[in-house]
Image (cartoon, rainbow, N blue to C red):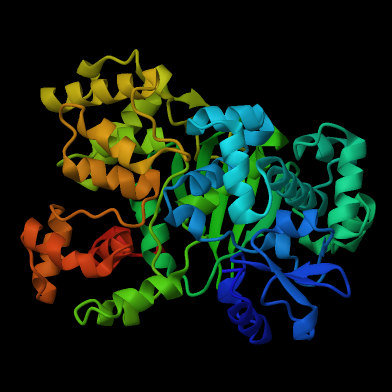
Length: 489
């Protein structure tokens, strides 16, 4: 969008928050870059220029605005809507792959040369993977500076910087303030009261309907791994350097997030996974506008606009849970998953109580006894085959996965049918166009709305909902009186 000058100018002059994260406005006279909704008086048109990423603006010599904090805007919805190389690379960079494995590690995961990745990211985002990762490190550093009492040396290394000198230089260059000055600007009341807990706000594009989002996560919560408590969804996180516990609480204009991590280097990855699970980078206006064009769906959209797709923090975990939940009730699926957690999960300490384990890794599950699960023999065999395929890498479901390839890998496994493939594509891979025409709840909803209810006819009708069919699924599911559609009391 940054290349459409007139459209960007209109967005800036109207302070349209929908475009935050889509592009960044740089002011030639002040050398500052802002988000489109910046509250200050818009600059003169002749002094505006636009960049597709914060990293590109930083590379051009602009610093972040102190008023609107463009580095904290919601991410571009493109990276979770698309399945091409650039989108897959951006998801991996957000997950911290460049910080952990370097650009060669990013290239290896994507199956392309480092030169190809550099060229494509520069062409679309105006910055290469190192610059994009540097911009993310700066934002992580700012979060740690403003929300924790960690010494600056620990902040530097936790944010992914190789040296304190580089940390100081980057913070000064990006924010025009020293780390100490940044911390001094933070109000004391904004800091967490519990030691070791980081408190921050996760922004999103309005509107957001929390009912099905948190309702689904709470209704399907695995005992010991997830819980709903005091108006917040809590769960354990398996992270690259350690583990963590997150509490996510819906508010009118943000999601309150409290993180407790065993290793602060996991902060950026943990935030990225939580945002992805809650689908916070979605563009609900674009989605709902398209779905409203269907006369049968329009009343559902008008009733509760801004529905998100509840996703996951761990794709392998969700795939295992999807197989456990085949053709059984939500309660039965939770019971099966809870037994796996008790037998094979890694114990964790939750000072607040309630959470006891990490969901077991595929490596830990590879040695499980299938006879211990009270399931039909064929489903036990399917679960074992899936676990082996995930552990060996024959099936890859990470954030940088190719969606079509992952679908084909899953479909090749015996016992994995179209419903399981599509629910994994929707909630684990994050494909916004995943669709479940054979789902019983979808078929009942379609029949009640006067839509075609047979799978073939429903697929043909759903072509008008593309590329947002996963969101149409949420609106159709919402027609039923089921706990997944209700924000818990």
